[in-house]
Length: 67
View 1 (cartoon, rainbow, N blue to C red):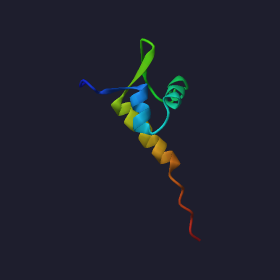
View 2 (tube, one colour; view 1 turned 30 degrees about the vertical axis):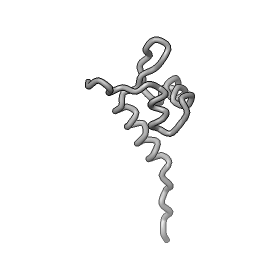
View 3 (cartoon, rainbow, N blue to C red; view 1 turned 180 degrees about the horizontal axis):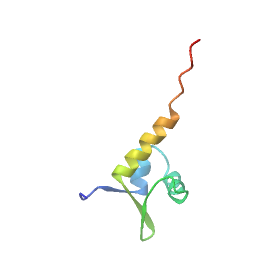
């Protein structure tokens, strides 16, 4: 992988528009894959992008059926 292909929990939080604590909660809950490095976490850019796309899809309002 290229250098810079990973994000810290803080960087991932900035990209996802949430707090660092939210990212850490998702990691510990198993919703966001990450690797423990020392006392922190790193998340691959690809994994962060997949997670963001899945969140966006869930937040889309469902279209109402027309009768």
